[in-house]
Image (cartoon, rainbow over all chains, first blue to last red; front, side):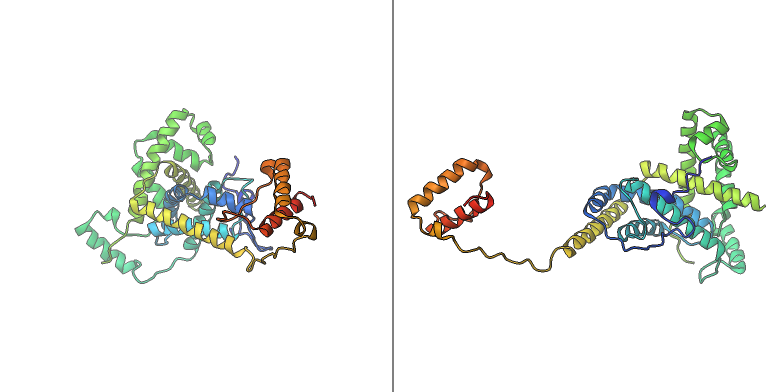
Length: 223
Length: 124
């Protein structure tokens, strides 16, 4: 199956280090600036923020503390790095939207891997004792499932599957991804579901992830 | 276990990407989100404008007009007006010359205008 995540060709980055190694200073020419200015609308920026939120959720599952401001930061960094030439965009090869989506995807993935490989406990982070204390408190004040906790990909996928319990098309879609599917066509081939069923399942999956994302990115009051 | 973890990471990556794309089309925005998006766009426009300004020459040399030719200096007003009339007739709207808030032209203004037109039309 084609790896749609390998987008180095489209955005000109080094997939191993994310950021292209700059050999020449970047000086945007007039046509480039005109395209950048034309395509960088507030609507696109707001759409990118909406794209970045589920990506931020994925970063949170690796242990990094994130909130809605982190999603905004992902967008602003991608735009700023494109303007300065740190991330190269060729308007003849793809739209600014496509480029920025890939840049955010790549940046969030890098942060997720970094958080996974460099776990740390900071002031305010949970520790063994604090976790016990929090769980005790949660019994009294809240649903323990919703206690602030570091969750991991496995737990997160388990939560998504639990939320989708009984929704066979969504579960089949997740099975397809587990089996290596990447694109819509891959999923349709694997699940043998109709395009409309896929579409509706996709919408329901979006609601589940949105709800988990909202919960994860919501500002938390300090104890 | 490792295999399961890898699968879950990969699946979560795909799911959050696909859901993100859907959210782009159909996401929610609060007034604060829209204000923020406008601010980011405005800030980038300011950076672009600053970049454009930085590329302009620091000083622009003022070109001084050359001396009026002896031929035109020798012409009286009536001959100058006739010459100007013929140039306008010949070049029509291609020959345009702007003066700022002038009701009348002095003889030398007229000479200067004719010389400019002739130089631009390679006459004279």
